[in-house]
Length: 346
Length: 272
Image (cartoon, rainbow over all chains, first blue to last red; front, side, top):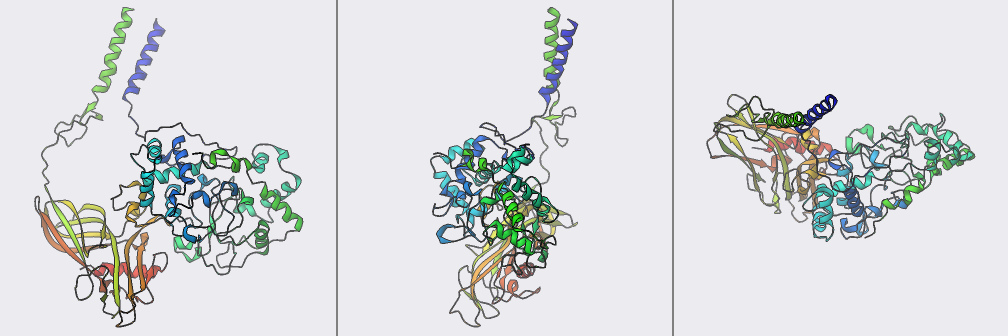
């Protein structure tokens, strides 16, 4: 009896505390929680408190991502320049916007975009949510004012209900639009390439001898590729001038910082799925990986802001072939075939 | 078993009492302030408000040359004998404060967007405590905190909403002063008013605060109006530096920063 009373008192004490504890406020959630599949060796990405993931949000974002309703003449969607088959980039120097316009920079991959802290080639935007507005309103891209976009979504037979379910909104809003697309984009995680199987998953036979030789070159002290293309996502997220021009038509990072020392600097891209995202650089000026390696071997055009690590190196034909073979092992076929990332069935 | 029932009853009392006795009015300024309460139950009763308020209204109007009211979309001849047609003119006013005679500053409005896109007059207003004042202070543009706002989180009619079309989404910040129009910069000519004028300032480094010294009083439930004029001639040919409309016809702050700086500094001196 004594022990029973002890338990009872303990239980009451617990109840007392619980019943008085302060309520925490949060946006009510509907839909099942969406657990990101974090690959071995990858950290958890930072997710904003006002856009925690759930299935309704991700599915709304996916529908919007693939819907041409967000372009002026309803001809293109986000997916027109970020194609799953191309590692969520495209294979053009500059992408096609509406009314025959073309973009001013090469379409960047969305692979593992959840791990980035700034967006666009110059990093001018700091929020995956807010950057959504950029391509929608840019006159060389989708060229649609967000006011019109929201009106279209309000008139649509399906979207109002989807916004309500995802964000408890009475009607589609710019808040919901930007959150939903960002929520979908955060799910685009790629970490099951042959390199990942070899390096993070202990499958020593998933790379062949040439690929391993290329990997050693990549991480080695002669080429030093991994000093910028570092970490699990093959980028240190810095901005660098890699000396592809002596004079830059596009000032890059300097357009954001106004610092002349940033002229010609661009965000160091991830190399994941790099074999799928040709052509390369902010303007697509290198058609192939071989062109890129030749550029770094040559040592660049010696722009004043060129990173001093780009000083040239010698590389044999065989080594170049091995390095390219290694870069191909960063292609994640599971990622580009994942049905959760493809155009949703109506 | 009888003991157990008594115990449970007792426990229930403790449970209820332990919470209810802690709820009450937690605001020390209320007449029914409960010092034992540690959770507010919205029961606070306040004494009648002693600091009564009136309204302060700040009117802006645009003038072109010789003090003439500027008519949007209609050409005028400026002091350089260029022909100018203003088609859009907006700016952010922020951190509006009234300065008491004892130099204390009383903030009355965080931010507003003054737009002359349809008329050469616009205004902002806010409630202010009654009393005597010796001037006002406000910012042109947005301070760094306001400039870092997320434009998707505001109601559509809020001055910082994305719907105002004042946000640079490629650089995650707001435009501060937005002037658009056309000019014919052949002296004395108005035959070809087709040279674009686009002056968009922004960036934290171009936020400026200014002070207007003028004695006034706010009285109960009345509106005090202060009238300010923005003189376009002084904006383009100001005391900081003249802008050559022929060669300095465009700025987006990050491009042609020096032009944006001239517009900003001249703007302050063009307010009269």
